[in-house]
Length: 163
Image (cartoon, rainbow, N blue to C red; front, side, top):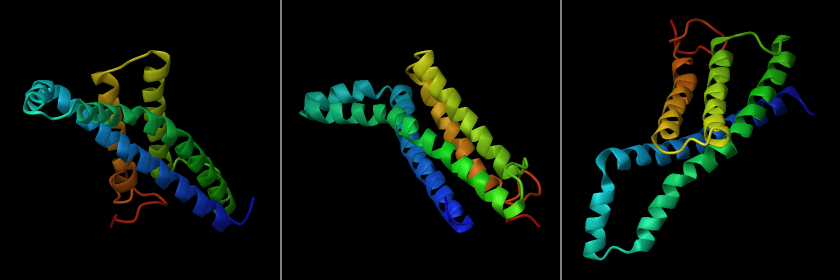
């Protein structure tokens, strides 16, 4: 495949690409929850009375619905990134998986997004429930990225802010 540095570079790139798609999905789903919470459909009706085009309303609806597509695109990137990280760890430390806090939370992130995809694709959930799962899942991503690095999960190879 290449050198250890290539594995690290591609693995990091894929994980950051996944985080980017999850961030975009978070914005979409958080907006959806806000729209439902604030009942902005009434406000949209008022805007329509003021002459705001139906096309603008359609674009907002499509933007909110894009969250699912972004998560579907991000999940395989995260999967490949985790596997490549394990391959790099095997070359660097002699083990593929060691239950380090970062590895464990990456797996938790993967499982939460797999649960989201399962509820959307297999169970056919729509509306608030998958939106809430997607928002929660992004909170797990942020914790995996920041919380573990800052030492909130204890000591590990990926803990940089502890002590």
